Length: 416
Image (cartoon, rainbow, N blue to C red):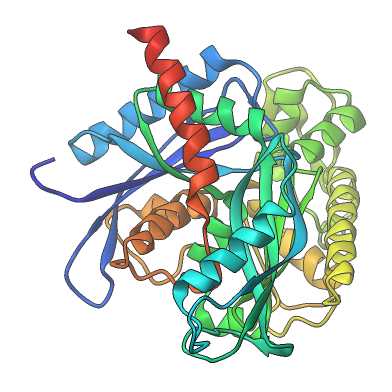
């Protein structure tokens, strides 16, 4: 690559594999997106590998497309993790401060986080992230950064994000077999939030909602901390399925209709406005009321928003996030969905896109590329030279590195 420091992010989705590439540059924004790629996804369902051969082919195709765009090789990538096999749980770690004078060092914090991890991770799960929520020193609660303070007993309340080991192993194996190394794995919705929120929004309180093909991911952040994470098993394909059932058409035809004339706001459509299905689908189908199609779409989007509000209620933030909700993902592009969300969530709602980045590719600013771009930002921040913020998460790398090393060895033994 002629000395260019290229970072790559891979968003492995059920409908599409999306990649973004960035390079470090001089200036106030030290990262520039130089290319994106997208191919239809095969062998992936709800973030889980269902066919290794098909998934590898899709990832390799997307990687080749990106390499042609940027004019060079991609050797490794930061990879998103999502799906129903990702769980979160609260845990507490307690350690004695090591120094005789009682001054807390980084090593004490690391040991406390490791204690929290050890007490929360079942044998068949791997830790993705450990998010410290608050520290206590000699029972003094509410400490955000204990380093440099003095005490004898250090405690941390942490949120442990973990994924099923087999899920991680199959995902990393698919990346390795496509010819790429894995820099690390990142929970997809955290990478998304990295790209589409500002420091001010994260301080005030904001929800980021990624509406994918088969599921919707949610993160709530406030005062710079992760407050709540959730996965809802409803996505854009459920809207398509509802249209197919309601109109008695094939799924691909329902998708065509959704893209061509879909809306989640039937009240804005006149009763007498008919849709010539035959002209859109190339069939002899009879005309149908566009308002009826919108009512089908509205019903499913309302259900999704009610589920989102239920998650906000669990976090104690229903109707009370000053920075509102940011919608991203392919499902967020459905006309009218932001208005439905605003009404059902009782919050300001906006369509999100990557913020505060330079890009030579306009497509990088599309909401569907938010996760891939966020992964590039995450990678840039990992070595301390990027613009993304990283104070709210503390990764414990060893467990995940161990399983990735095992997967590398397994893949190489097969192809050697």
